[in-house]
Amino acid sequence: MRLHSLHYKNFRNHRCLTFHPSDGVTVIYGKNGSGKTSLLEGVHYCALTKGLVGATDSDCLSFSAECFWLEGSFLSDLEAPTMVKISYTREKEKQIIVNNSEIKPFSRHIGRIPCITFSPAEMVIVNGSPAERRRFIDNAISQINRKYLDDLLAYRRVLMQRNAMLAQLSEKKSARKDMLSPWTEQISKLAASIVYERVQFIAVFVQRFIELYGQFSANEYPGITYRCTLGNNSTECSSDFLYSLFLEKYEKTEKLEILRAQTLTGPHRDDLLFLLNDREIKKYASQGQLRSFLISLKLTQHKYFFELLGEKPICLLDDIFSELDATRIADIITILEKFGQTIITSTEKKIQSNITAIDIEILRKTGRG
Image (spheres, rainbow, N blue to C red):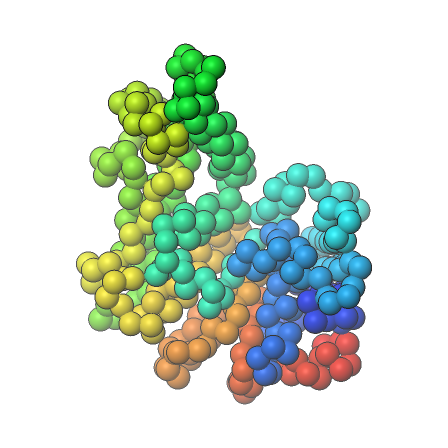
């Protein structure tokens, strides 16, 4: 998959601009605050229907503008075209049109344009809370597994309803315990399906990750372990057996859950343990090691997507070169040459025969590049 062109109107600090990246590695360079990241964010909207790292639609609207508008032209590796139009105003909800058909719900679009991102703000994946690592694995699987995304959305709805019922029971309102059972059964089925898919994903992903990380450092051995609230033995179970384990767990913890008015077990509380030389990375690794670990996660995700989909995802890499030495930067660029279309932002111009460099200031002045 590759972006042929993307037109921005009133998006962040781009009032009117058309971007044409190369089919290989494109580096957009310039000063901080000049709009480099905004270019990536527009591509991210077209691929995943939302802004980078939790930005809201209103955050992306230019100052004093009534609406923003994006129109992207994409081509698959087999030259099949995809046209994406996105518009947003404060008064109306966001509208997404793909190949002249409006998309609702937006989740139907996820996976159509596979996309991998890297941003400094995503360092929280390796050194932040468990919620950030859950978000990483959920976003990764959702782009390649439609059922997983549907189950995940359904799980969040059922979790909210079950917690509401637990709150009523905790406050000794009219709710009866037998009213909790249907929600427990539903959440157990969905939780089992989600955990099973996560475990299967990690089992395959980690082998490719170890191989790719070795290209950066042959003296360090990384690892990834899935931490499930059911216990470590649950990571080797079938989906049906996980379902029975969840039912059993919820039965045992029902009184405590009512007391606390919240669901205490499930994929919404699981975590990924990232290791380097058998030590938890967020406790012992340097900033350079943390960044290399995250970059390796993202590049492995690209390779894994390509294996499953037969389509190379678009890579959007924001400020990827910071805190890396020249050797690792060269290693990354060598890897990216084989990855298809990659768009990188940098404060410095990169002069290499295999890179197309675009000055963001010239692009903004001319409106085309």
